[in-house]
Image (cartoon, rainbow, N blue to C red; front, side, top):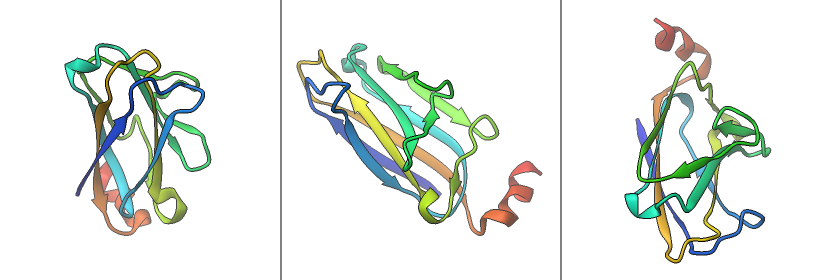
Length: 126
């Protein structure tokens, strides 16, 4: 299953007060995440993904972020391991654009193998 979210980051959004959008996913295993922006972002939009407890998921290095230039950012299982069950079925998109003069939309897509979590690990790793 694919879940795509379109998140708008208003012009001038500071890092200290970023856009935080809760993305609710279906239970299963996330085997691919894509973050896509338009070239118009021109390196003025930044983002990361966190769990609902504020722990960073992507980029993998804690404290880092993606600077968006219109590229497709992609992460796949097993590099990322996102559980989507219960409260863990929520991912938080965090984005800011302190120097942007225009609002920008970022598309975040999660590809998920749906179903009962414990049985899925066997199917994904096979």
